[in-house]
Length: 155
Image (cartoon, rainbow, N blue to C red; front, side):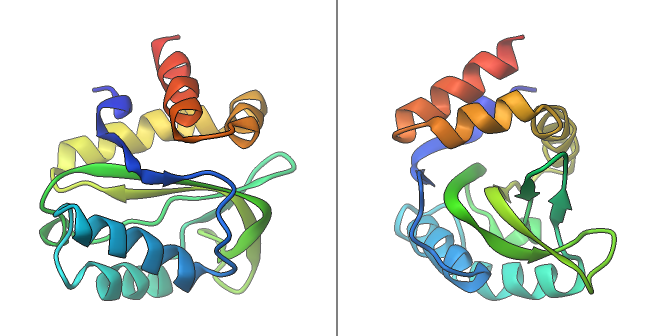
């Protein structure tokens, strides 16, 4: 399973100007609906799931978030990628009373359980390497993000 096949240029935002989690979710949901990737309930379900099961991860000097929602909200599988200059607050996976400023956000739009598990495993390997995160944050456009992730996945 290669997560690169789920990357779509129209679902990547480099140095996004979103200021909070809600804006991130609205941006992803709007583009997802426009391209037929998600149902109308995607935005609400994504926000609801994040509230109950936060996805922020505080790693070695940086933050990442991996929000996702129910498979029935996804028509066509995708992984949205957002990078940000200053980070967007996400509550921590292990303690929802604490938050981390996520500089890289992967919104998983997956509707097959085995895809989700394999992609999550691959993403965990990617995000635990600070060099990978640095390369994503240095990306200048959508093609750079795809290129960086393709090279990492090929290792």
